[in-house]
Image (tube, rainbow, N blue to C red; front, side, top):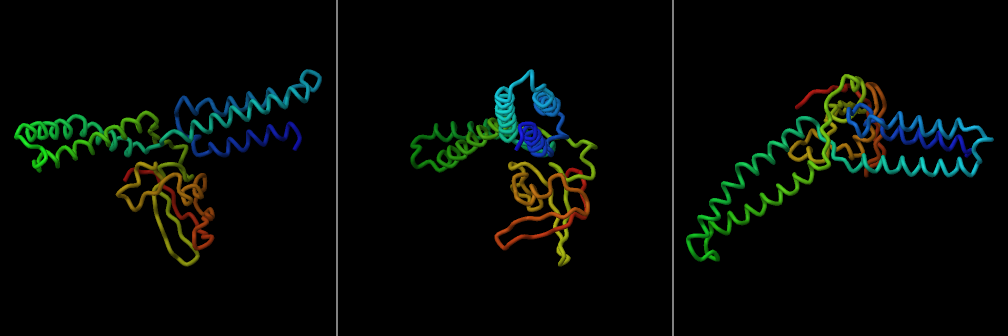
Length: 232
């Protein structure tokens, strides 16, 4: 692969990876495309007399390192729909402001009664308090890396994060699901994780597009009937 072709390949490969992030209005993603264009143009447009092949090769290595770093940072973020973000935030607030203080009072009262080893109220509520504390720690750490993805009209007609996607196969079987964050799928059979094979196969696709998914039973082909964006 020629040196210029290699630069173009790196940029194209990376921009295709961040395709489903392109609608996210956030300072950490807004600069990506301008930065890529600038970095690649600096290398591709450099005159051979002004830059040696070795120098351009070093620039490519630096560009590859930067792209890898940016992509890694994106993957480490926890994307949440606006509804999922609010629901988890409400849960955290309720645990901190209501449930934990109530259970703490019960534990203190039960402890004041005497022998804790045979005190069922103390044992039960102490265990519950530990569970609440674990959940509070988990949610607190989650919000340190969470990013709320708001709906944007730019998403219409394409399957991106937060979309409801309806599929049908050649046998007439139909399925419908919403693509959400890992933390949002619990208790919802119609939600699937952004990291699931089906979600990844749908990302960036349009109505009537073919979706191919590799399953334990073999390759499955579906067709997109509809894509919509609404809470639920």
